[in-house]
Image (cartoon, rainbow, N blue to C red; front, side, top):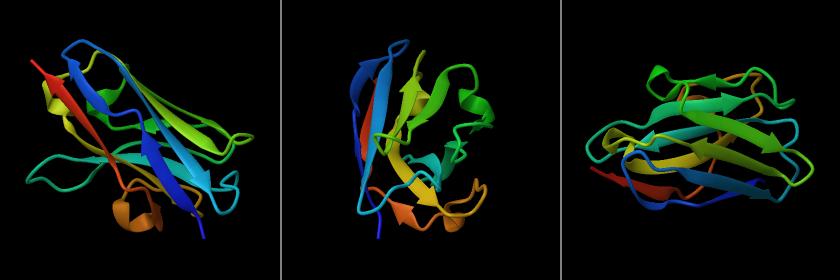
Length: 123
């Protein structure tokens, strides 16, 4: 069983940056595709970014391309999401997720989830 714990959320002004981290325990996630999702109040959970087990082929939702960067360190069992040029519409609870599938951009494709961390961007 894999346990995921996110950290790094908080309140930031528009244009600012935050770095989210996701630590995994229970078993190595080096063979897992890892993703970040977010959910704003009243909205469905949406895909933000994902990275393959090797760290290659990162993928992003169009709204964050050029601003967010996903990375992983398999030796440390961690995945990070660097968020720059934040906008008020980025405000949401951000979730780290893992899957043994080769790829996934839908919440149902991920079997392991963290508890989420709140990101609030003020205008």
